[in-house]
Image (tube, rainbow, N blue to C red):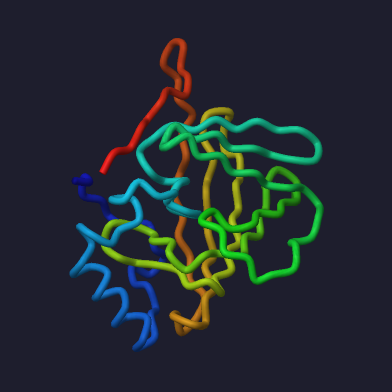
Length: 181
């Protein structure tokens, strides 16, 4: 139920260890029943960033909030503050940001271990650590890059990158997307 694409993983391969690959294959085989999105759960980070639903960014000096059309999800990025002590199991993780010139750097930890990256069953463990980079290229697009570290399931850190585009249609707004199973 998704259009084909060339992929966004640098090097085109996710470096699973043996146990991680076995779990990914199990997820893929059972994806119709076990994908969190198929159950209308929050898709987690980074998946929510590249789902085909619009989102809005609201910024203050201390916090950046992302409001998503998909199941009314909200993501808060707290600026220049440390993560709370964990472990904490959150679908969207805990996001802490800082600016480096025109790039927003977001450090994300504290996942619940049920986050999938896509419908193919690629996933994160509770020990995942993400570093996101949002770099403004023009007023209408951002380069989004994610470095994924998760030694429980990957043999090394790896990256994804893609452009994010501003919605330009007249009266663009976030609408309601209700998910039903």
